[in-house]
Length: 174
Image 1: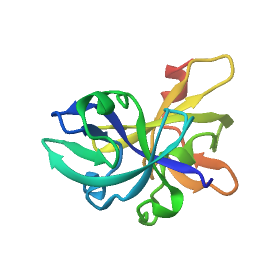
Image 2: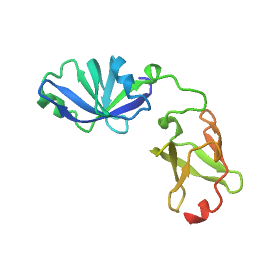
Image 3: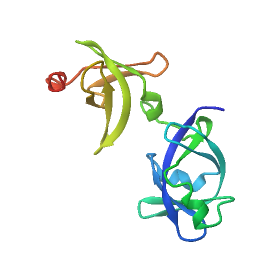
Image 4: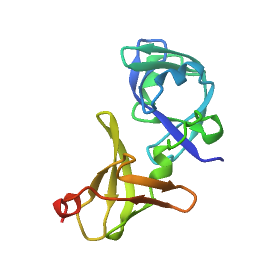
């Protein structure tokens, strides 16, 4: 099976007819409105189960989704805590210099001055920008704003991010 990309987390059931409340983990929550084939899985993509989306709608920052075969609240509750994922071929098309978080994880971060700093273990949104969490050997993880001024080159194919750390950031984590 092609690599999956997580687009949302199921936070619980909504109502009595099998609808699921989904917290979107995508820049465009409206993408759920066109969702047809997808998978539910664990956080690390384990145990993927194919699902067909019967319908979806927006509701106060969340998305409400109903899958075929999930007709009541009890069945919907069994999916609480699972994630919704799509095959890479069905993922949204990215703009230039945009990346899927799953593709950034595992990349080696190379600073112009210090060389290999560590590997990206997570990427999360902090206000208007994203922040990389970099695992360093035998040291505290380092948080680096994922903005062009600091992270000036990304190569998914070659497995690295080249950066210029802001002055004092490295020392802050030592």
